[in-house]
Amino acid sequence: MKVGIIATGWIAEKAAQTLNGLSDIEAFAVGSRQQDTADAFARKMGIPKAYGSYSELIADPDVNLVYVATPHSHHFDVTRQALMAGKACLVEKAFMANARQTKEIIDLAHQRKVFLAEAIWTRYQPAVGIIRGLLDQNRIGTPKLITATLGYSMGDKPRIMRPDLCGGALLDLGIYALNFMRMFNDAIILAIDGNCVKSTTGMDLTNTITAVLDNGVVANLQSSAQCVGDNIGVIAGTEGNIIVDNINNPQTITVNGPDRTFVETIHVPQQITGYEYQFIACKKAIEEGLLEPREMPHAETLYIMQLMDGLRSKWNVRYPMDDIY
Ligand SMILES: NC(=O)c1ccc[n+]([C@@H]2O[C@H](COP(=O)([O-])OP(=O)(O)OC[C@H]3O[C@@H](n4cnc5c(N)ncnc54)[C@H](OP(=O)(O)O)[C@@H]3O)[C@@H](O)[C@H]2O)c1
Image 1 (tube, helix red, strand yellow):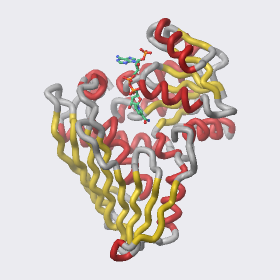
Image 2: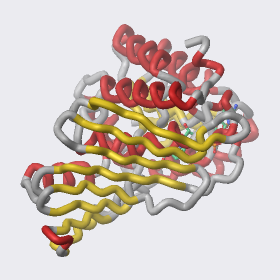
Image 3: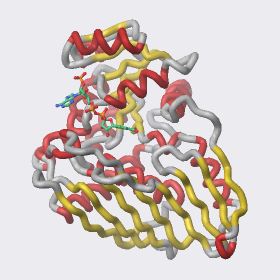
Image 4: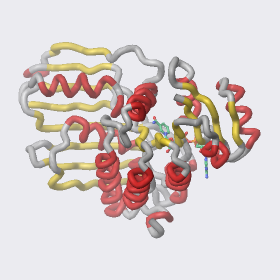
């Protein structure tokens, strides 16, 4: 599979590094808004083709998968263009600016019969199967409480601070905490609420979310773009707990029994970066003729975006595209 990487920022470089470690999936092309930037990135990462626009990369007939790594604000236009050209797409989280954009893009993929996936990397990682297995084996009894925190001290990064780049901690970091809850407990949410501290630009910088699920579980989720979080996720049950370190790229999964007695720590398999699993999942799904990956169905991408829309609305965190789409 030949991957065309759109944009040349932090995650684009991580993706290229990851793909360089795989044998049957290749970082084949990169597209940037400027030719010089594309050329420099291609040289640095050993990528054969470099384009000075996203459109040119999308038009390359040899690219099998377009990986969209711009800020969230630009995912919609780039993905729409790629889907219209019949190109399979893997789009970074947060998938779109809001649920309306998300629905439009998912509908387009279905109309055009083109594969589309959200690059929420944790969904594709082996830790998911390990943790679901522990829960299925009833190792901690009945889950009652889920807690998850993700925090990075990100300074005044424009894509966190600016409304036009869909800023805020929720779409960048809180999304991992929401996915942690949903991956291991997808019961109906009876109530969800939260609070946040905002920047002078109106973006949420630190937030807390509480959800009550219809199976008696409460989830307490935090994210911050202002501090170094413990980044730990805990599923607490009647007979023990599972502690996941960390929710942004699980490395260890510790099981404790009653009275917090240590039972075992499971280490995930050795990884390139942890981003490889999403590309492998896309290749497999495309080969099977699917339009979405089993690991992260479109309905789930849309549901999480709807949850984030609801929270942003309560916090009055607004993006310019909320008025358009
Ligand atoms: N999965 C993960 O673990 C992970 C981690 C970090 C980020 N992400 C996601 O990946 C996306 C990009 O994040 P990043 O940290 O890589 O961002 P970044 O370092 O700021 O890079 C973003 C890139 O997007 C392109 N771009 C297009 N329009 C832009 C604009 N108006 N302003 C700034 N850049 C623009 C630029 O590439 P060109 O100049 O080459 O066009 C830029 O280098 C976000 O959606 C983010 O949530 C995911």
